[in-house]
Picture (cartoon, rainbow, N blue to C red):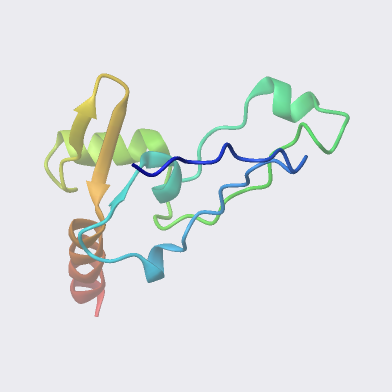
Length: 107
């Protein structure tokens, strides 16, 4: 039987660096925050320390979260998959197909 050694504390925090949308496979999933720019909380707006202020994340869609949900509701945008009560995500391939359709309509 193999025993695992406990991780040693390095003092550094684990940092999650999101993979850019372009590099994700079509069968990956993305959440709302990766698709559209969210609202900035009052706390982040008033933050005096740079540590408290979040850097804006690059986004895929050029509209707000409320527009995203309106498009999902009227069937214009792919429906997300509900993994749990608080986790909803879209397949990257579905979003890419939707973007390609939008480009084709404007070309």
